[in-house]
Structure formats: C-alpha cells, structure tokens
Amino acid sequence: MAERHVLVTGATGFIGGRLAECLAQEQQNRVSGAGRNAKVGAALQQKGVTFKQAELLDFSAMRVLVEGKDIVYHVAAWLGARHGGKDMAWTLNVYATIQLLQMAAAAGVRRFVYVSSIAAYGPTGLDVVTEAHSVDVRQGVVYGRTKAEAELQARQTARELGIELVIVRPGMVYGPGSYGWTVRMTELVQKRVPVIFGKGDGYAYPVYVDNLVDALILAGSQPGAAGEDFNIVDGPVTWREWFGAYGRLAGRRPVAVPLWVGHAALRAAEILPVGLGVDRNLFAYYTARTVFPTDKARQLLGYEPRVSFDEGIARAGAWMREAGYLS
Image 1 (cartoon, rainbow, N blue to C red):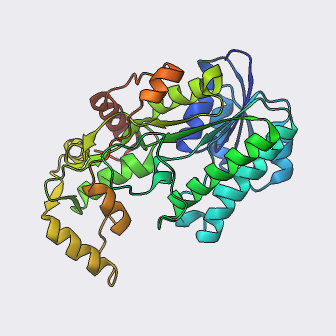
Image 2: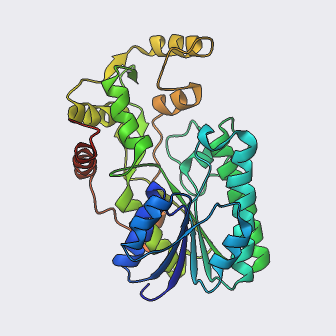
C-alpha cells in the first residue's frame, strides 16, 4: 500500500478518521480526507492527512478530490435523523455514492471500497448470515434499506464502468471516538434504561474500530478482493455480555426486564415518549441469535482481528475516562 494515493470520504467521522490516520501513518500512503468538521480536519492534517472541508453532495469538490487517486474509500453516509429525513437518507447513501463511483471511474481510480453495513441484510431470522445471503432493499429500516440499494446500484455501475468495487459490511463499530456504540451504550446503562430483554442471550455483532480498519486496508490492497463483499464482525457476543461490559465501566448493573415487559414497553413507546433505548426494529436484533462469519475475509484477504472484545472494551473505557464521559 506504500505511496499509493488514497481518498477517504467521511474522514472527520469516527471510522473515516481512524482509517485516514492509519493509511497515512502506518501504511505510508498519500492520503486525502474529505469531511465537514474543520476542527477535526485540522487534527488530521497533523497526522499526515491532506484535508479538504467538503460536503459529500458538493460534486465539484469531489470531482477534484478523486483526480489522481489509486483508491477511494467511501465511508461518508447518512447515519440518522440528524442528517435529514428519509429523502436525505436516499440522497446521501444511494445517489451520492453512485455519483462518486462514476467520478472515480472517470478519473481512472483503480479500486473503490464502499463501507456498507450488515444492516443491509435487515433482520433475517437466520442463525448464520454469510455474504451469499442477499441484502434487503425492502426492509423497514431506512438506513439498512438505503445501504442495500446503494450496494446493488454500485455493483451494476462498477460492472458497466470497469472499476474494481469492494464492499465491506461492518457490524457495530465501537472503540475510542465512537458515540453511537460506545458513549451511547454507557449513557443507557447510567440512565437505568432497560437494555437487556429476557435472558439477553441474543447476539450483538460488535467490531472494534482497529479491526475494521485492518480489514478495510486489506480490502483496498489485496488483488483477490476485487468484485467481492465481506462481512466484518468480531464474533458472537450476547447482549448481556455487551451491556455488562459497559456496566462495569460505568459502575452500574444494566437494567434487565422480562421479554414480555420489553414487548409492552415497545407498544407504549409507539404512543408515548417513554425514553426506551430500543425500537421495534432493533428489538428484532436484540432477540435474534444471528452470527456473521468472517471466513471469506480470512480466506481472500488474510484478515485476522487483532483486538479482542475485552481489550477493545478496555481501550474504549480508557478513552471515555480521558474524554470525561466516565468519572
């Protein structure tokens, strides 16, 4: 990977920032990062990343940024209501992705690595979901649905334009710098929100951020990755284990309720703002025992996760204490 010219979108976000930093410092790439946060961008500059403050929908800026690049890592995405409603979800996750892919192909970019999500599969009801399972463009969750649609359109576009496309589907990315799957988890425990339903023996699907970054770097460099898709999840961890780990960091026992109470609370939450930390779609994940094997990434990429769950949680805890989220 040394001396390759790389663009990372979403470089001021949690995943994109860590990826850009590792590509520049550890892989010795010439990295350009695009993002919205000028303050975070200035910090990236200090780590060897050439930063450009630009919106994903600023196609003029994006067209300039893809010029002369060998690899584009497309990390930027719609992540929730703070980025706009359902129409914006489609605009950012689908339309902007295809526009960027077309620009990259026109500029002669060799490989385009698209960071999707295992949410693209939707709740499957299956025990095991491999890359052979189809993504679900009809699911009810707008994030997963638009990620799935972007995958399908990107595949077709890549075939038509002759650019190498690699799709990476991470699970719940956590670690230092993560609000959603690190700080938010701690807050739910601290606020005594019910987070464990029934036995809590459904499977969460975490992946520590540095493990994901390792997989992304391999996805950009390994010849056998071209045209492939990869699930990246660290391994099965029950929700009781997941929230129990954050409870130990916070010094509080996570609140557990019987399964029937969870169902009743969901019905109430649809009428009143009861502050439940889960909706009906997420509840389906909480109670499922689905695993997402990484056999394909191991075989084609040579991928092996370096950071265990216990070590990842310890690092997340150290960061939260340093950042003032934990006393």
